[in-house]
Image (cartoon, rainbow, N blue to C red; front, side, top):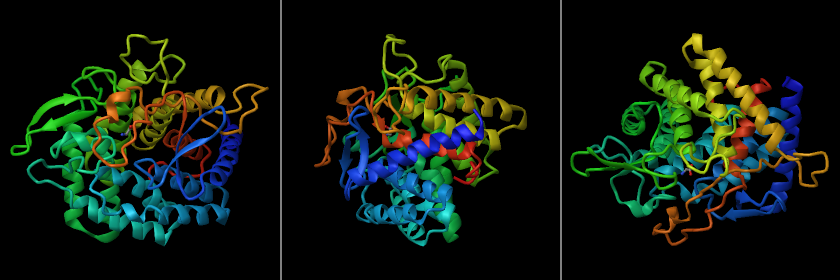
Length: 392
Ligand code: GLY
């Protein structure tokens, strides 16, 4: 596809964004029925709300239309209540909802919210474990105890590395580095695949068991575990270019993905579900991997860059052609919906969540997911030459 085609896909997604802004009121879009376009929303943003704000920052950056910045600031402000929540996963909403606004647009509100949240994330650091555990209010994991880690939590490292650079906070930088070292080492398997979660001994910090609460099994490779491993390792490396171990981890994970992805590029929800191909895809994981590959195409061993770029382009092309509405000439749906995201195939995975607002309704498959839309939108902006993949 040429730049014009990437821009055409961006325009479609902008239509859906304007539609979403009208539909969700003061809440955050979480996931939507791809037929009706109706969103299930969260009041506080959960772990996904920042992706909506991130799309708005990107839209302002790409179009230079101030209305997107105004919307981004309005929704970012609504994240403020979560600055001190006891969860490592708040790194996600505050990176995309705050830091990204500052990186792309020098936005001072985004910066202020994200710096405060980063100081709070750093206070979750446990020296005995060498990392930030999930936390008592962790979305999708508050039930698992105080010494649990997951590859999803690696978001905290690029977030704190950004904040440490902004503030000159050397201690925060050390915490972010230790977290990245530990989380990558705990979850990257010998063969280049990633496992989602680990229980640690609270005293020694030693790994007790590896498991997944969202993938098919403890020995399978859940698509998003692989994505978070690659994407967040390369994002951490982008802030700390001396840490070539993190780049190597990202390359190994990306090579594993390329070797195991379906020939049509769009991953199934778990690479080891025995019912493949009669099982759900995950376009959200696939879109996020495209972003990871585009970052590697700018940062990896020069001999490998072209291969990463090519796979990313083919992946985004497949997502746009087959999964972004309209998917046929008679498709009546709102343009710009990314269909076939698999939020959570295992209905049991949040059933033990002790938070009062815990929702079992995240057990949706074949839906539009706000984080999948964010990553497709980011990938399209990189491919269209509107943003530098090394910076975000
Ligand atoms: N917990 C992040 C995810 O579901 O991918």
